[in-house]
Image (cartoon, rainbow, N blue to C red):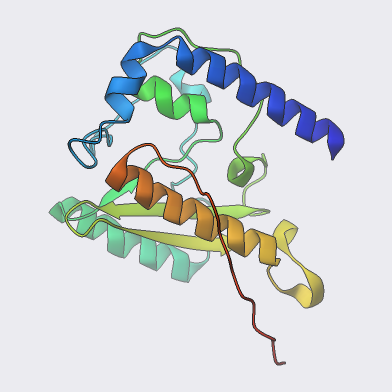
Length: 193
């Protein structure tokens, strides 16, 4: 655990240093004047070489349940009508930034986002987020894998808090710009079997 934490901190320091060297990113990604003006377009593609290395984890895979696929299809139909946008999801923050500024220097990062840290599909967080700019609302379709189990086969409370924080954070970033969770309180109820 300690070794992973050290790698995570080193990776975050590399990303932070790289971001400070990119003046275009600040203007492009964190505009307060126009809500969600920095969101990717519906037909967004990664344009820099080796784009095949950057898998969009928000696309359906074989581990998704039928109910998750049905919800995904429902919101994809709404996104084709123009009211919702499916937000891409990668396993590293740098991938998101390089889509916005494909010609900028790319740092060497070996860390991954917490919710996208597994190579095998279906074991951890399986989710897709849709954003509605007019309503300033996000919808997260989420399926927990077996690595997120707590006691008695239930989803671990920390995993629940993580997906709630991620979804609320995505909505806040899309609506207001640069934000960070300052405090998150969740009261868990007793489970009856």
